[in-house]
Amino acid sequence: MEPQPEEPGAAERGGSAENPIPLLLRLRAQTKQQLLEYKSMLDANEEKTPEEIIPEKQIENKIEDLENEIEKVKIAFEMKKLALDSELMDNMNHILKLNKIIMKLQQESWDLEEKLLDIKKKRFELKRASESKFLEIQTEKNKQNDDLANMENSDKMKTLQQKLQKEIQITTVIQHVFQNLILGSKVNWAEDSAFKETVLQLEKNLTMI
Amino acid sequence: MSVLRPQDQLPGLNAATILLVGKEDALLQQLADSMLKEDCASSLKVHLAHSLPLPSDVNRPRIDLIVFVINLHSKYSLQNVEESLRHVDTTFFLGKVGFLVTGAGRDSHCSVHRNTVLKLARAYRSPLLFCDLEVEGFRVSMAQRLVRMLQVCAGHVPGVSALSLLSLLRSSESPCLEDL
Image 1: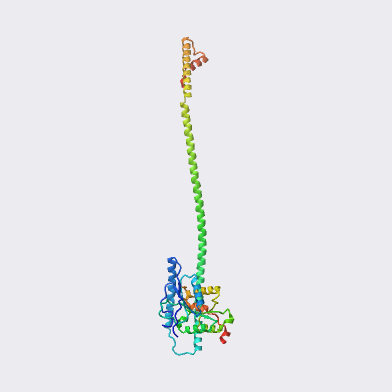
Image 2: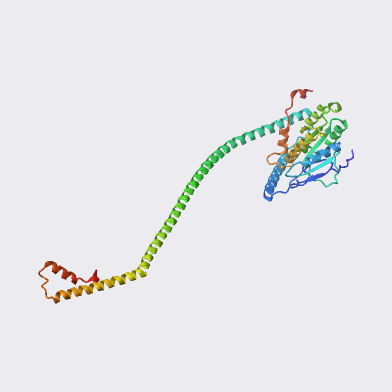
């Protein structure tokens, strides 16, 4: 039974490129699992193995008993896990419900904020519009004032005023002439009421009109 | 040492090694190629050997899974595997050994009976897999299964150990076969 030469059939394939953090987590899980396996092997080796020679049938029975034990332990473990899991599932369902409520409320508050923003925008626009209107009114008023001032300063007004002055002077001269005529004639003007009114009217200063 | 032990060396980081033992070189090579084509997060190494014991002068990483390939068409293949089994340490049989039977499709060529292999697998309490390695589709799916088994045996799958995988793979034993 010589050792046969090993076939030149050793082939390998490297792992694909991966982000460092998931890779490290995976390696950590691997190392943990391998450590667990070694520890369990150590624990198993501490058990004393029987030294005497036992017939094969008994060995088979013993092996089957051990296998059944393993199965029982596994089933008990799975049941425990299920029991824990149910509480876990309850907690998770509760968390999911709360999360849904939170999301709904957040959505509502976001909608309200949007409405508030819209109203603020509208108010701002109205303020701007009112400001511009106010400005328009002011400019109109100023224009009117300017027009008025311009009109006053225009030449037409000057000539009219001059004419008016001339007429007033002429009428005043005529008034004086009539006054002097009546006074010079030495007539008693106070007796006749109509005559009195006329003389008093001649006294009126025309520039005061 | 001529006996193969599972804890001879420390495991390599992110590395998993499988040893395929069998006389059919072409089939083993094809199976190895299919396995290497599989998508796997850990780095795989496939070693092929005709029989055990392996030469001890080769620098070899820790072997996580041994698969003995038996061809039902030749009695010699069965004999070879039976002899090699003696060079494997008993602690290997806690889930790190598997038997792969090929050639069951063509019943006329089978010189080894199915029951013989069944008894062998039951005696060593290891999983027995049937696959026609010459058919491409079956080979690829078997390669996927082997890669998954290898990951579990190398300890790369958290929560599943080789021993738990063994009890999962154990098929229910029919009482009529026991009486045979």
